[in-house]
Length: 397
Ligand SMILES: [Zn+2]
Ligand SMILES: [Zn+2]
Image 1 (cartoon, rainbow, N blue to C red):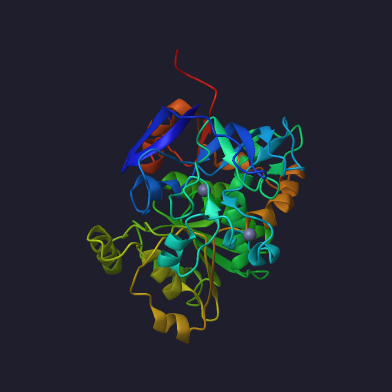
Image 2: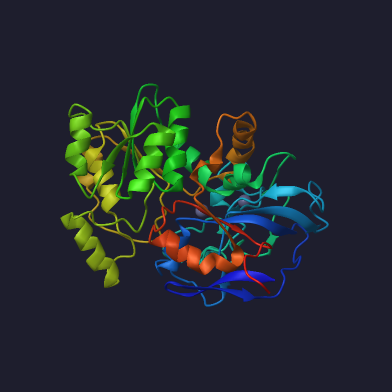
């Protein structure tokens, strides 16, 4: 089959690789009909994520048709149309039983490495380094899905891929970010990062009763989308001081809830701490750039909540712990507990409450994925979200 393979910084290639096979009784093989490039894939593309190996297949936002199931999978059969969550969860451990599916104790075969990095391992993830299990990803024609009796969500006929594909990650991730923000009716919610997760966090914040949404980014297309689709007021951090502007907009209070949908590759935004971050990560003194998290803590109103859906991978410093503690802030974070949210959010799509396809700007054949990564990374051509279509070809073979 064809698959998008990682070879190093800014080097991904579409190659012929062996087809995946059933290895465990709870596996399924899914023929991918649509799959997406995620902002968090850029952490791999940019070389931020340790334990990547040449030839690793990327991608964790897939959907398609079940073509084969192991004998332990009784709830799926060949021909079923499914969305596959980016997290791999056993459904049986302490954490899965509590609904903390992304904290699954049984799905990362490289748990020992993860423990060294984080104290405990979290769930295995598709296409996201050997630290999270080394599982082949879904930017490919076929995908092996472990614990397929727990993960994939069956999609009823009549819903196009584009409306349900993002149940694989970014819609539940944005939704859990809004839930973690502990939004109360009438709140003002500031969202750093207007990529797809930020957009879904804003849409979801409305569902939780947010009255004002303030979107922070420096890409005009993304700010425009936030204003148009989510009714957000916008701040371009290239043009103004974010902290001062947020205080002005909220009568000196600060936003009630702050969502960091940026994560470990925050841009400096001309700030001294951002410049220090860039220096430290480039000299391996830190793995993560914490500028956005610091700014969120600094800006948030007293007693407010910081929610972190943005991906962090290791270590960062200069957290304003004094501000955090003395202002009485709450921080909630986490990879998304996908299986907990997918069925409920599918219902919201079915009822027409939301059409997640609003973020799609590009749809290209899998063969064009390397160019699409570059376009997405550099935010060229108005690129906000790329859908890859394996099996569809724009080139002549
Ligand atoms: Zn993703
Ligand atoms: Zn588990």
